[in-house]
Image 1 (tube, rainbow, N blue to C red):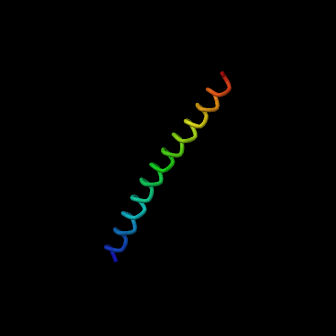
Image 2 (cartoon, rainbow, N blue to C red):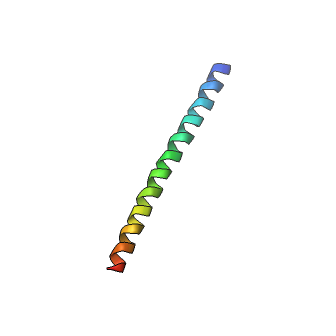
Image 3 (tube, one colour):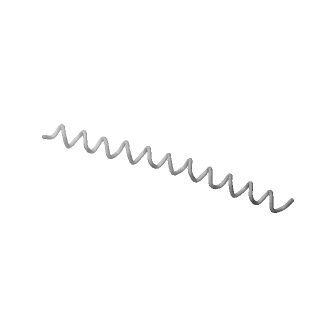
Length: 43
């Protein structure tokens, strides 16, 4: 039973870390899109 709990905790930790990196990538994409709009507006 303890092995199952350890694997569940490990799975939750890995998914939390991977989703955090996904949101960081999404944030960079949104920031780049905003910078592109800002440059287009200043032209």
